Image (tube, rainbow, N blue to C red; front, side):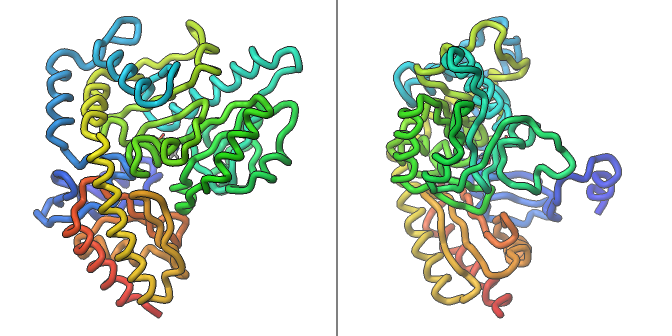
Length: 397
Ligand SMILES: Cc1ncc(COP(=O)(O)O)c(C=O)c1O
């Protein structure tokens, strides 16, 4: 395969790519170079949540592209400002936005903002900079966000890491309390740990976490890079939980495939940044912002409610598979985030599905992860489950 050889020769070998060479994609489908059609139940890692080449998104992006692609953040790009307004209105009163290009950058901004807030707010009692994160978390690939990531495999060869991140047990409030010190400035958490094996936080835990942060006057940061933008059936995961964070980070599906990250901060800390504290050349690219405004328009209550109906249907079908195959230990997740926990390596299941026209993923070796676009239909679910069924049938022990 020529393309594979060229990649092998000229690229750093950081991705384990499958043999799929994509020619085009539309809605929930992808076609390869030979014209073979695939049903996409991964959406580019929860990026194309409103479907590939969504008509409304593409139209909005093209319109902006014909005007200008970039002007720098030293001037006003109307649609960038409009997006900030739309995001702020949808989160909480007093929200302020910083736009970047990716999830890691959105989290970097959150970490910097928390530290600056701690410096200003707690300076009398000594500087605060420590952030409590969680085992199994994933926050990005920059040094600071990797340091905040609670998975040792990402830390190998990179030490010393950025200080000072400490790791509590997910869904365990006592573990958080034990780690608190006079240096703690924030708690940073994914409401659903997706990369870490699909683990949703429980509601009571997040509520207790909010109470604890208020009691100690520290910030609560929600990393919604993967679980935000409609994945839980609400526009933002915090709305699903009824717990208001002080900072939210978004990326992935925010612009449905155009690079964009957002850090949204509430009244408590948003004003801690002043001129010069943060910035980005490409952050809030006008074409990406045009796409994101279109995404927000599409993701209305009716759209999200419908995604939940289909998600419930998919859940029932997956539970049926679990009853049929003992290698399936658990079906877990939230909204349209699904983890099928296996007692075996999931790689072969993913390969079989791909060969048979279904795109899925495996995380943590044994957890099949489904992140379909939110536009899938019952027919799509039936087709996907049929392929999964055959995959388990062939592999069952
Ligand atoms: C929860 C979470 N945070 C941050 C990131 C990093 O995002 P990006 O790859 O856009 O930098 C990811 C990526 O998978 C993620 O899942």
